[in-house]
Length: 78
Image (cartoon, rainbow, N blue to C red; front, top):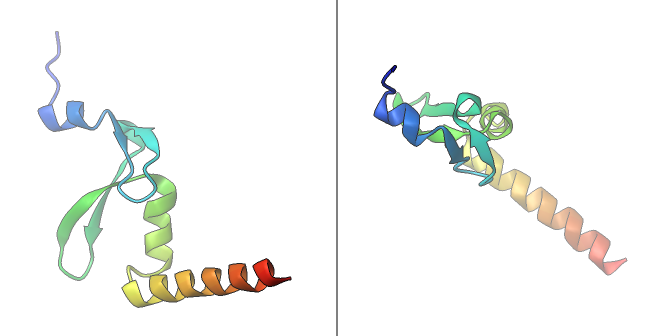
C-alpha cells in the first residue's frame, strides 16, 4: 500500500482560506507572497486568480470593496 505524505492527506478536502468553499486537495492552490517569497495558505482557483488580478495589493482590494459598497448603497436608496 502506498503511503501518503501527511501534508497531502491534511489538504485532501480543505476549505479555501478566502471564500471558505470546500474543495478537493488537487484543486487547491498554494498561495505565496511574491514580494516576501513566503507561503501564505491554500486557496481555490478563483480566489487565487482574483488575488493575482489585484496584484496582491491590499490598496486595490480595499478600493474594490469601497466600490462595491458604494454601488450597493446607491441601489438601496432607489
